[in-house]
Image 1 (cartoon, rainbow, N blue to C red):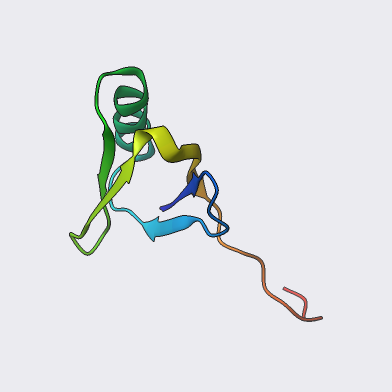
Image 2 (cartoon, rainbow, N blue to C red):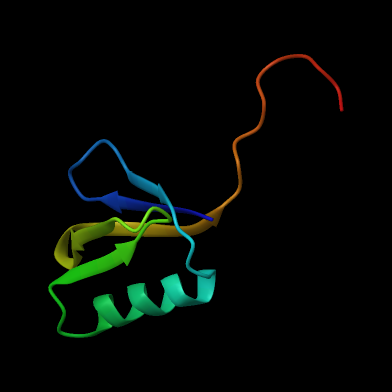
Amino acid sequence: MEVRIGVRDVGREVTFESAQTPAAVRQSVTEALSGDSAVLELEDEKGQTIIVPTATIAYVEIGVQEKGRVGFGTH
């Protein structure tokens, strides 16, 4: 599942594939934003850790669908 994190005052998103369930990611985000934590810490499907300061998070999209194909083909 794809996770996108928008960071304030930065033109690019932090985008990665996560093996975690949408519910687990949602819980981590909610706990980081509502608690006293200074960072949001998530893990991608390769085991790498992504750390984003909670004060700079603009939005989080969980489970974004794959982008559509470009072209004139039909299914």
